[in-house]
Image 1 (cartoon, rainbow, N blue to C red):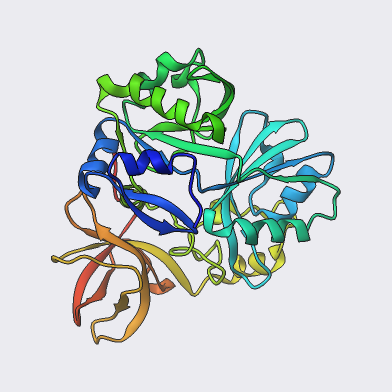
Image 2 (image 1 turned 60 degrees about the horizontal axis):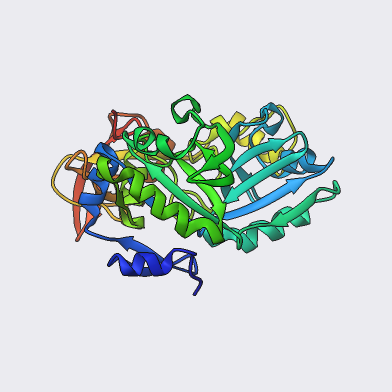
Length: 360
């Protein structure tokens, strides 16, 4: 099991550590609900250094990225980032990722920790364009500083105006006294903030200075459990739960990142699926009665017959009710429809709702 550059720091802080995507990661410190509320109301810090980073450069870089990703990376200007996914040849998704344009022929691809090797092999297999590929996953650390007070708490650490970095944009500069730090606004919580990409050898110094600067603003370390409840309240997909090798981006509601203005892996089949319509859709739902939906619970009809499955579910700390996402037949996917979640052999009614669950 791998450690991040900050594993010993988390242990010293009393974090509960668990194996996650091959890494020893902090799942919680003081408790999920308290940490969730910290991010919604103040500022919290996640160590997400387990994520993978691929540097793609050279004349063939854009051609390679356009081939393997569903979104249109040609629209990226330097300093901008883009959410995308990598379709496979069977109608599913290899992974979802964020693409950063660093320079004229230079990009950074940020992928999920559990898929680093799979993604690297997949992209390499399609690199017939002569792009230069570097796997930087073992050398980078990544901190997500999230919450409404994040900008105010961290501004003393940099001359870059944090409040002027638009969503899905980034700046490269000095942060916490360290040069060549990437500061990006691509948050996964819905509460604002930004991400800090730094070298492993600088991670502890950056962490310490972040907590020193944020002390007056109630800054706290946050574990992966709260990261999951925060992203679910926003209706953001988690690879391995809501999307995987068997789910198409169109079924998952990711048509907005599936651009048929170019050719990419399996684009013809996905175009045909769009034209014919999908048979199932990923929806958000809120329980009408008490209960907590969980991953892989059955979604059933009034007669108790299985119609789908829950992909993500929790008791929402912000809303105080059970929420979840899951795949249902397309005919049941409209907001306002009633579906049923089988919880301990009881069919609990739930209402299909428009995402996100949490609205500021």
